Image 1 (cartoon, one colour):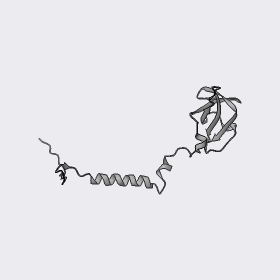
Image 2 (spheres, helix red, strand yellow):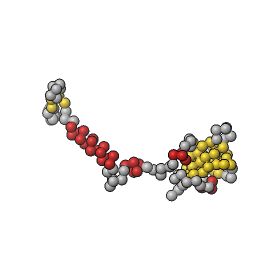
Image 3 (cartoon, rainbow, N blue to C red):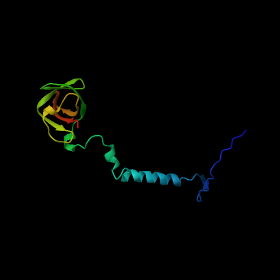
Image 4 (cartoon, rainbow, N blue to C red):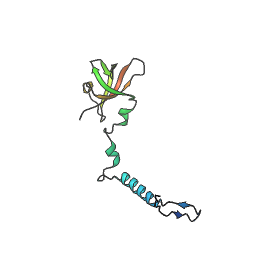
Length: 134
């Protein structure tokens, strides 16, 4: 027994005479979807705000913080991040994830941090940002 497939009639393009499938409906759906995502489909909340997992951090604080990790151990002069020990510079700058300057005691075991190591090969942290638990 032969199975027959029902096909929609194809339209001919007036200029070229080439048969083409109707794509107008697909373009309209795409346009509407993009417009809704830009304007905000969730009660006026911009979609960018929905995608954020961390608060925005001031650009000045983030500048140069190329390293990241989890604090695994710490002492008065040493912080161990992901199993690697770093000395703390005596003039270390410590910030929270909202850009406020905080005390070094805000860095705790199992905290997520971003940091910068001094460029003079002393392997000391001179700037660190800690994500505080909220």
